Every structure is written in C-alpha cells, then in structure tokens.
Amino acid sequence: MKCLKCLRGRLRLGFTLIELLVVIAIIAVLIALLLPAVQAAREAARRSQCTNNMKQLGLALANYESATNGLPMCYQNNAPISSFAYGYIAGGSSGWGACSPQALMLPFLEQGPTYNSINWSICTTANLENGIQKTALGQRISSFLCPSSPLPIGGDGYYMNNQYPGNNYWGSVGPCVVPWASANPPGIFQIVGKGMSGAIGFRDITDGTSNTIAFGEWKMGDFNCTKLSLQDAINIRTNTFPSSNGGKPFGSWNNSTASSMPSAGIQTFMAFLNACQAKAPSTLGSWEDNKGMLGREWATGMFGHTLGTTLLPPNPSYYNCNMESWGGDFDAPGMYNLSSFHPGGANVAFADGHVQFIKSSTSMNIMWYLGTKAGSDVVSSGSY
Image (cartoon, rainbow, N blue to C red; front, side, top):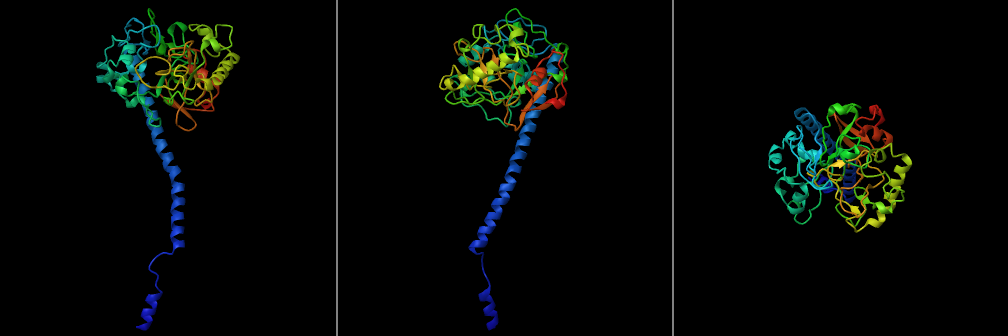
C-alpha cells in the first residue's frame, strides 16, 4: 500500500513548459509547410475559374458570329445597324458612347434579361455620366470578373449606384495603339464610327482562329491617382513626346501603318515605352494623367474599359500608357496590355474558343503575331 502511494507521487499529471513549447513549434512548422500548399490550391481553383470564364467568352463569340455572320464590334457615333449587329448605341466623337463587344454578347452568356433591359438607342456616355440605366449597366457579371482580381473600388458619385461593376476581360485590337476602324487595327475588334461598316467575321482571320487572340485579361486598376501602379495608364500628353509628328510617335491617330507593330519600328516603340516610364512620377495626383480606372465597367467599347492591346507580354515592367493632349479619359490612342494576379503570366482566349496561359517571358514579337488576324504570322504554342 505504501509503495502504491509512492508510485502515485511519482506520476506526472501534465506537460512541462519545454514539452509544450516543442509541441507548439511543431504545429507552427506544419502550418508553415501546409499554408503555401493551401494558397496554391486556392489560386489553382481561381485560375481554373478564370479559364472557364474566358472559355465562356470564346464560346459566346462563336455563337454570336454563327448567329449574326459577324463579330461584335464597338458600335458608336450613329454607326449603321448591320444585318449582323444585335444592337448599337449612338454616341459622340470618341470611344465614349460606343457599346462594347461584351455588352453585345450578353445573350450568349446567359445574360438575356440584362441585355433586354438595356435601351440601345441611348449612348453609354449618357448612361455612365448621368446614372441612366444604372440598374442594368451597373450589374456585376461574374463572367467578366477574374476571381483572383480584387473588385473595383467605389464609384463616381452618381455612377452606377456608386458601384463600378468591373471587367477583367478585354477584346483585342491587336498590336497597335489605335482602336478605330478607320485605322484598320490588326486585331479582331475595333470601334466602328459614323458611316463605317463593322462586318468582320471568322472568314477574315486568315492567320487562323487558333492563332489569333480574341480576349485577354488584366488586373483592375487601383482607382487611386495619388500612387503609381502598373495597372495605371500614364498619359504622356502628345505635346511632351519628342517626335517630329506633333508628338504622336505612331503617326496620326488613324494611320494604320504608323500605329501598328512591327510597322512602327522597334526604335519608335521603345522610345514610346521609355517616354511613358519617364512621365510616370509626374502624374501623381492628377486624374487626367494618372488613370487607375482600368476595367471599371463592361458596357463602353473603348480602351481601358473593354478593349486592350497585344503590344507587350503579360505583366510587363512598363506602365499602360495613352496619348491625350489635354489629359482626359481612355478614349485616346495608347496601350493596355495583359496582366493578372496569376503567377507567371495571364490567360487569353483565342478566336477558336480555346484558352491558353501566356507566360510573362514571351517575347514582344510573338505577342504581335498572336494579336494579328491577317498578318501571315503563325507561331507554335511552344513559343508562349
């Protein structure tokens, strides 16, 4: 009996402090090892959803072309309603007022009620600036949003019920700085102005639909003109660019030869890139020169909102940039390139509907070839 009491006295009823600390350290190490795997799994799921969104855009594009015998252009400035156009928006003299390809494809993205609720006889300028049709055009449509990208912040006063709907997926105008049909952009989308026809179809993509980018993705802007971000569009103001052509490094706004790559020449293009980089620090605090509103909405067919360029590979070290003499918005010539929160590159949807991840290490000239619809440029998938 006495020995039993002695044994009980020797029994320990808990952990020592050292043992407890060791256990905590082991748990911390396990969490540290598992957390990156969990985060990678979550990003893989988000990237998969992004890929699915872009596949839906590619499918919608094919269905639109099949139903209308043409691709959805950006209709504005009282552009004629062609036999293949479901609708158009009468607009002014710039990208403001143009409807986007994304808006026209809504019926093919299971967004028929939203499409039917839009008054297509009113330009998007009136809609956006005066809060008209904000219920329809202010909707956040999941098919236009990459789950890896944060949602846009706030809204402009009366804009869309004080909420930007956001848009991560842009239609490609190709490797050029001018989206106007009169400039004959080499990509598959363009802004169709007064008296112009926008009848472009798959038949015009002679490089092959599997070799031509239709849609790309970008990070939405930071919506803050007081700080620099590579999502910003830096306005260099045409009169500050050292060029003999009125400050326009790619020639006139509607000159397809001078505004496209590689026609413009690599030296001219690099001078443009360097001018944008040099201008960046002086744009802080000015909404006219520092434009962090990238991808704020899906309704308007213009650069920075629903149209982009294939001038640089994904996530470049150069700022997006446009050339507007007075400042202004995204309705001027410029470049708005691929970017994403996916490590190593960004997704694109080709005109045949397949989705490919373009690596950030892809060369510029490969991007130019992938962006043109009829440049006799066909590259292997191993190049990007």
